[in-house]
Length: 607
Image 1 (spheres, rainbow, N blue to C red):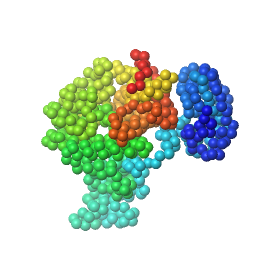
Image 2: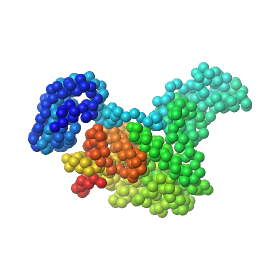
Image 3: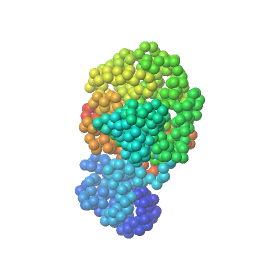
Image 4: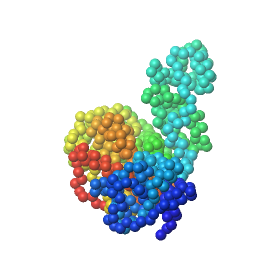
């Protein structure tokens, strides 16, 4: 048997402890064998120990209902730093050897080491992102800067004025505050224009310094919200051809960002920025293919630096939308964009792209169907590196290349006749998002959906969200050793469940899962606790998936969604088990709300 100290110090967070702190824990440590079916402690028993499993399997139960299963290297009884009794029953499910640490010793170390205590407290509160950050000892790559919120690099308050201030006084304010712009606002601090040093040069050539700046300001002003990433801010500057963008918070002026501000953050120059600029200038599919492959490699490095999925997906969305727009413009330069709208579904439609995203697109037109155009775009995208959809949900398929009236009739039929196939179509196309062309066509279609929703369709969508049970039981936990499909057993149930709640509450324009969830929370449909738990779980699952795919990209192997326990650190396995329990709880909520249940017994298959 491995000496206790050697075994324990390899387990996070015990690896964070100093030699003296470890000695405090070891000084009173006991080793105990619990025979199979032996009760370790009962709910309500006074707390005495923290338990670390050396070998075997322990089940935690609440009134005979299984809550969790704990195996080698895992810890239970951790809330014993408080003085109230145990909240669950613990039973050895097979012969189990545990190290027992006295609560008082554990509490002493808990109070001494902030990193050690933060590890436990963040996990108990299910703050998985913070939990992993505390547990991680990695350094971030420089390129992770791209996914920072833009507000984090604002260091000056904006200089603002009304539209009637003279050019002379505006220039004096700019010099006084050492800024290159003044934001022109209305009486509610909403931006109506911006006057920059570039506009000042116009006055010198064509105007008078006593003129009001409203004569020379740029209006309407280009704005972004404070949660926009640095990358998205830069891409908007490139798209709009401007060097100043106003940041807003709740529609009011928050700050001003310039190209120089961003360049300072990104020095030395980054491959992502260089490659993104090349997308704008690309003239052929071949060029875009080379650029896209290089971007995937750079994104993979950012992922492995520990960056967050919710931030990264914003950047990936910008990159993908820009590439797809460029492909459409390259393939067909004469098509009238007012006559159609190109839409995305799936993860592209939800702005939740990962590295292994394939094509999910369709076309809605007003006047004339163009299968040849759509087919050329789909093939060009495949050449660039975005694979064709294996289920043929693409604009090149006549079924998904229809006029607006046909699309309205599609949805009317799907809602009124929610067969298994029609429910599947709803789950796909309710995530549609316009990418290129006439957005008014899309808006008219979305508006028509509101009167079509039926209770039967909602119930069918709810069933789709709960019919696959995540592996949370004892056999499921053991089955994790064979691997689990993160998309099938974790990501899809959350996405599908949030979608049905959004549709049931008339939230059609929002397709992003996080945004849907936050809106459902704001309107009282989802509790604060469930909203928090689902966001943490969804973010963790997507981060794990991105990391898995990034390793595949860097190894030049096939990207997939299957994760093996052998690939996971103990920390990730611990959080994975917790997230799957949250998914299961969410499914139970949906089953109760919509009176649905699984029609087939769950088969434990791990592909």
